[in-house]
Amino acid sequence: MVHETYTIAVDFDGTIVEDEYPRIGKPMLFAFDTMKKLQEKGHRLILWTYRNGKALDDAVRFCEKNGITFYAVNKSFPEEEFDPKYSRKINADLFIDDRNVGGLKSWGEIHQILIGEEKPAGSEYKKRKKGWFSF
Image (cartoon, rainbow, N blue to C red):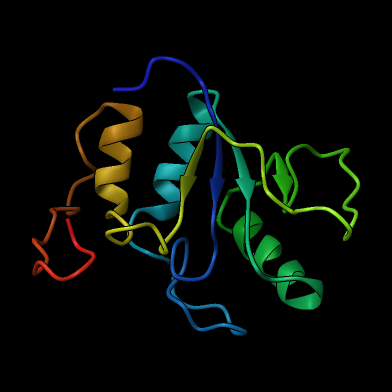
C-alpha cells in the first residue's frame, strides 16, 4: 500500500487503451477508474507516449473526455520545453507501461498496489502462462 504521493508516467497505447495505434483503442478495464483514484490521492500523472501531433492531441482529448487531465504530457513538468537534442526521458517515480518486463499488470492489480484498497469489482486477475519474459 502506498502512503506517499508519486509522479507516475503512464503510457497510452496498450496501457490506458487497447493498442490500435494510430486509432484509439477501447479503454482497458478499470484504467480510468484507477487513474482518477490515483489523482484523488494526490499522485501526479504524466501521459508518456510515443504519440505526437494530431495522434497525441486525440489521445489527450480522449483522456479528458474520460475524466483525466494529466499534470504533464510527454514531459516531466508542464513548463518544460522539449529540446530534441536531449533525451525525452521523463522524471517520474513510477512507470505504468505495457512494455514492462513481464507485461502490464491488470489495472485492478495496479489499483490494489498503488492505492491499497481492494481491487475494483470485476477486476479479478487472470493467471497468465509462464513464458520467457513472464514472471
